[in-house]
Amino acid sequence: MSGFNLNTLKGISFVTLFAALATSIASFEFFKSLQISPLIIGMVLGIAVANTFRSRIPHDWDSGIKFSGKMVLRAAIVFYGFRLTFQDIEEVGISGVLISFLMVTLTFIIGYVIGTRVLKLDKETTILTCSGASICGAAAVLATESVIKAPPHKSMVAVATVVLFGTIAMFLYPALYRAGMVPVDAHDMGVFIGASVHEVAHVVAAGNAVGPDASNTAVIIKMIRVLFLAPFLIAIGAWIAMSATDNKSEDGEKPKHKILIPWFAVMFIAVAGFNSFHLLPEQAVSTINTLDTFALTMAMSALGLETHMGKFKGMGLKPVYLAAILSLWLIFGGFAVTKICLSVF
Image (cartoon, rainbow, N blue to C red; front, side, top):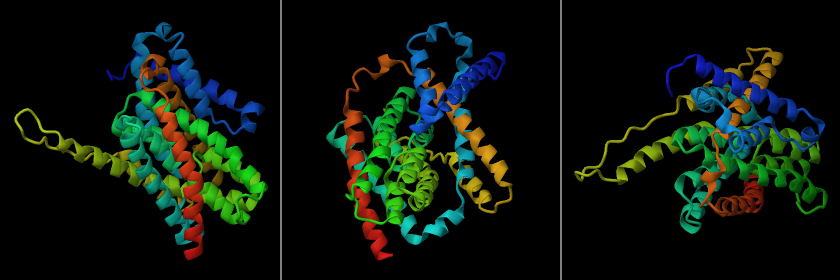
């Protein structure tokens, strides 16, 4: 990105207005009832403009749009830490932490093996799709994209799968519970929802549909999954750096690798730790979370503006197949992991 100048500010201002529009639309009762976040609306609007009027946006603004999709995103991930505290972990005990860890780890490993070896998907799309299913949906996809430096259109594919299957799960889980097809009480159902549903918003909606006991537990379990975002990003960064040594240079020597620890992942943990001391008033934390959601909406809008549908040619339905397989795993595997861990601990 070129120097930070007036045109960069214009690009950022344009994305800010875009995010404001998405936020306003998300406040409509129809979208609120479906728990559709402004992040998703910003992405959809961005893609729509990118494939219709993108050429009319001054080229000089591109630096500001890219800044919003990278630096604003990373700052937003840092402040995402205000959504949880370490006390949340204590409340659900070792079983909640173990369930969250197993679901994040197993979902990613299973998805990566199926995506790269069975479906023959490219590494970047597979990692992004798996991160969205494993941790916290769109926010995890965006954070992972920033670490592996994947093209924006691949992030949009992964986010689209989160939206599709997360929305299905949001309606499916409560329906199955009310039909008596999930043999657990409300508390354990909350654990199951928090451990296996994609987005935080999807978890909130599904938990509320079951009841207050399920809702509170589901959110805590989900936020523990969110907490694993930081070590996950650090591990992914290290893995990508180490895998570079597999390719020899022209002189036959393996290139030196440098493990880059994503600073925003470390700061995310630090902010969560700070939030655990409850030094800020509740209203202040609520305001920070509202502003953080807006910043994430800016990032999604910016990535949408960088996504032209022509880039999707050749990808086919394989990412959808992978996401569908992961969704089945989250349902059946998630239930098995939840039952086993709760019975042991």
